[in-house]
Each structure stands twice: as C-alpha cells, then as structure tokens.
Image (tube, rainbow, N blue to C red; front, side):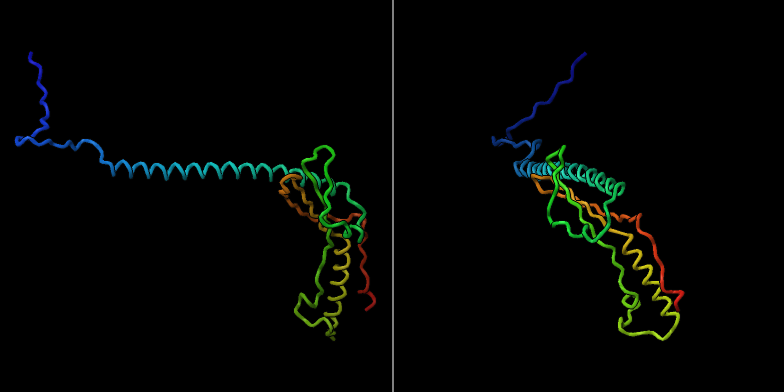
Length: 189
C-alpha cells in the first residue's frame, strides 16, 4: 500500500519572488484584540474592587444596625421618665460602649407634634366658627392632640464607628405607658 504524498507549498513564484502566507493574524488584528482584552480586564478589575468596598460598607452598616436595634429595644423595654428634660440632651455628645470602644452612640428624643386643626383644614387659626359641630370637632381634636403629644415620643439612635465616623441612624416611636389619657370639654357645651 502506498502512502499519500503531501504537497509541499512553494514559497517562490516562478519569477523568483516570495509568496506571503495568509494563514496568520496581522499586527493590527492582534493590537485590536489586545485593546479589547485590556478594556474588559480593566472593567472587571474596577467592578471587583467596587464590589469589595460595597461589601465592606454593607458589613459596617449591618454591625451598626444590629447595635442600634439593640439600643432601641433596650429603650423600649426600660423607657426613661418622659419629660421635657429628655429634649435637653447635649447635641453631638456620644457615649462609648464599655465592652467595645470601637463604637459610640447617642439618643435623640423628639416630641410628637400635631398641627392645629385649622392648619390641617387650611383655615385661618384666628377665625372662630359659629357652627356647633365645628366647635365640638375642635374640642375633640384638641383633646386627642394633647393626649397623643404627651403619650408618643420619637426616639432616634445614632451609632457610629469611632475611627471612621461612619454612622447609622435608626428611629422609632415610643409610647409613654404611664401617661393617663384625659378627655375634657365636650360635656360642658
């Protein structure tokens, strides 16, 4: 059996000049491919770096949220004596944790405020209504407003890292369970 014979390529033409092979890539094609690869590699590197920094920030936020939630739960479980003195806490004064000096916190208390009924209805507050229903509605509203403003308080807990000053705020409503609801003025009319 006879083996097939491979043809050899001729690199020289009959005239003696060299024939150029078209089987490889040109320099331009290689440069374009390298540029595309470099752009995608750079983009991937930037995205991975941002992902890592976002992940670290999310971890910080998660730790601060856990601490703030714990402080809010403690304040709800054992609330302070509700009075105007809560509003006098010094601004920007943080308390450091005894067990972990890397974090500090502060409480901010705010009163619950309801606007006057005339403002809600878009009326002049100095204008008196002759309608008896309007007067009763105002008395009822004023009683509800007075009771809610004494019974509901807003608590904001701000926790931050001592070194980076990165902070997390958490806010909730706290009820004064000792407040007795009083309702006066409707029977007198």
